[in-house]
Amino acid sequence: MNMKLKKNIMMIIAVLCCFSCIACAKDGNTASTENIKPPTQNSSKSKVQITDTTSLTSEKKIVESASPVSPEYFDDVVFVGDSISEGLRKYVAYEKETSGIDYFGNAKYLTAVNFGIYNALIGNSLPVYKGQKKPIEDNIAQMDVKKVYILLGMNDLYIDTDTFIKNYQELINRILAKKPGLDIIIQSITPITRLEESKTLNGEPSCLNRANVGAANKALKKMAEENNYYFLNVRSVLTDAEGYLPNNYSVDGTCHMVPKAFDIWIHYLQTHTLE
View 1: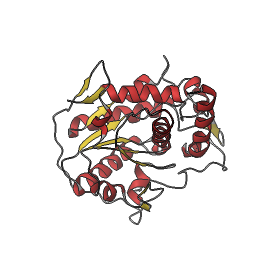
View 2: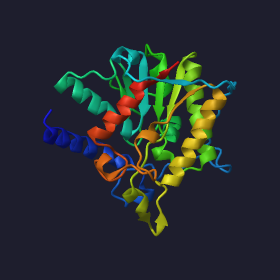
View 3: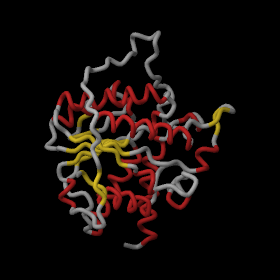
View 4: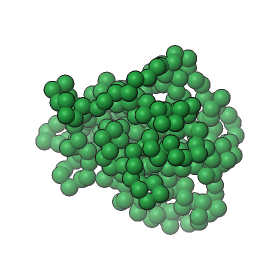
C-alpha cells in the first residue's frame, strides 16, 4: 500500500478518535469524561451496585509462539475498548478491504470514543452494535463468542486505582452473569506520550501519565491472577526505554497510534494466545 495514503487514512481515524483522551490534561474544547465522577461514600444515588461473585485463585497463562495464529483463532472473539481499540478496529477493517490482509477473522467489536469502565457501568458513551446502544453485557450475551478481550482504562485514570479495579471487576461480573464460561482476556492499558504527560489543566499535572498507567496495569494484572483471567501486557511492546509511547508511534501526540504501532500490537495478539 502507498505509505502516504496509509498515513492520510490514519490521520482521518485519529481525528475521529482523538477526543477520547480525558480532559484532565486538556482544555474545555475536548470531549471527555471529566464530568463523570465515580461513586462516593456520600452519594447513594450514583453508587454502582456490585454483583456477587466467587473469585478463583488459579492463574491462567498465555502461550507465546514464534508464528502468528491464523485469523480463524479470533472468530469467537469480541474486542471491548475505547477509541484506542476503535482505531485498531478501523485499521484492521481498512487493511482487509484495501489489501486483503485478514488479521482477526470474524472477530466482533464493542468499541467507542470516550468509552471506559465507569461509563460502561452507568450506560454512558456505549458502543453501537447492530444499530443499537446497549449495555456491554447484553450485547455480549447475544454474540456467538467465547473470548472477551478488554482494553479499557485510559478514560478512567482520573479515578483512584482501588475504585477503578472494583468497577472493572463489576463490569466483568455483569458480563459473566449474562454469559457464563467466557474466557476473559485483559489487555494492559497502552502507553501515553511524553507530550501528553507534560500537559496541565489549571496548573495541575495531567492524570494521563506514566505513573498512573503503570499503577493501573499492576492492579489489573493482580486482579487477573486472583480471578482466573488472562492478562496480556500489550504495553510492553509499545513503549520506549522509559515507558512512553514513542512519538513515531503516535498519530496525534497523545495515546492514539499509527499503522506501525497497530502492526506491532496485532502481532503481539497473534503470538500470545490462550493455552
